[in-house]
Length: 336
Image 1 (cartoon, one colour):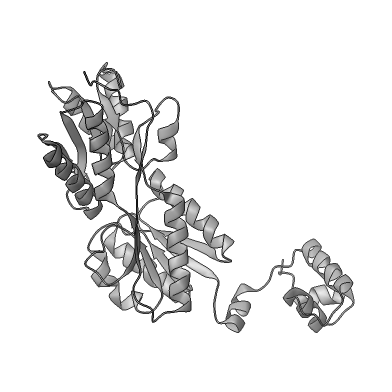
Image 2 (spheres, rainbow, N blue to C red):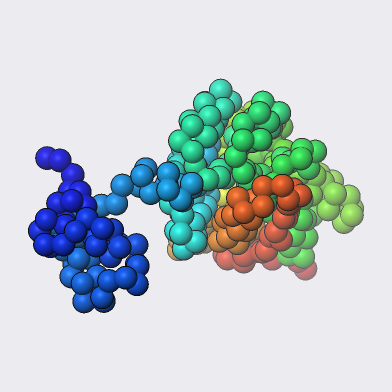
């Protein structure tokens, strides 16, 4: 069946094509009664505006491209949801592409979005090596990254202070009396994880603690990775009284492995995460964690991008948001 056109609506309404067009554009040249009757008829007939034609007239598409490495990661999906809500509130639709942590695919979908003439792009990169290879494309369209990897690059970005986040977490565990704190799951090829590890190490030095680090050889932080690593860890004798995980999904995997090993959290060992994904607040999990303010990140990224769209020659903007502690029930005090 062919789509309903303005001419179809005009024929049923018994008015001219121009009158229907004026009704849809909000023109004061027609009466309010006529406008309401035509709009009601458009809805009943299932008329939808031709967005391509409208974008040619307006010279913009009102579409923002979003590139994420994975929607299976709860933090990424929650952030995507916040970005979609706020972009829509600002009059823009979101076109989401998933790169699957594939460097070549990141460039491919970025070029695809440029070809679709999106007004701007928000990108959550899957690794550190993408920025230089995208320079020829980012020069063609306003771009904002949500990333902790950009201190050395002339790009617009929003991120959370990952260094400060693990400082807060380590200081909190220290205040509960913990002196042997394991940092669990640092990924060596991620600058985000590098900064989180550095925050932990700097705080250990400040507090006079011996660092205990269990690095991850995996490319992602998932429940399965946390479960596998923790299963091996719990099979040995360990002196740590607390585990600080580099991400909440790792912590949930640790929690599952602890249950299988008969280790009680927090009675036998305290556990902390980082991200504050929605799962971490479930009663069965109740994970103490470091909050990344996803709503603030989404608002800041969209606002920053719309500023770039309006002022493409403006200086690069950078915003680092503060993390915060979320206390739940996975940590206990062992202070004497």
